[in-house]
Image (cartoon, rainbow, N blue to C red; front, side, top):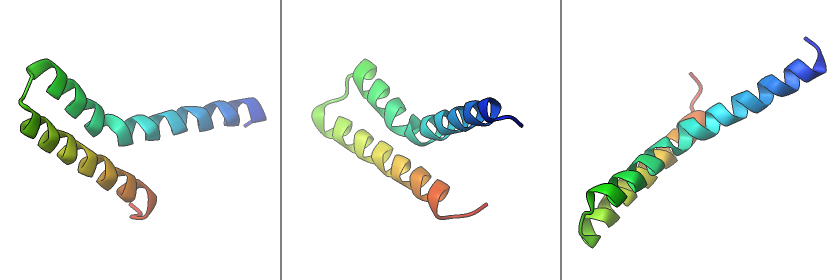
Length: 65
C-alpha cells in the first residue's frame, strides 16, 4: 500500500477505536438528558457509563483478543 492509503486507514482505525470506547458514556449522557432522572439516578447512570467506558479502554489496550 502507498503512504496515503496507510495514513487514511490509520485515521479511520483511530476513529473507530475512539467511537467504540466512548459509546457507553455518550449513551448514558443522552439517556440521562432526555429521560430526565433525578440527580441520584443520573449520577448512578453516569458512573455506570464511565465504568463501561473504562472497561472498554482497558479491554482494548491490555487484553489481547
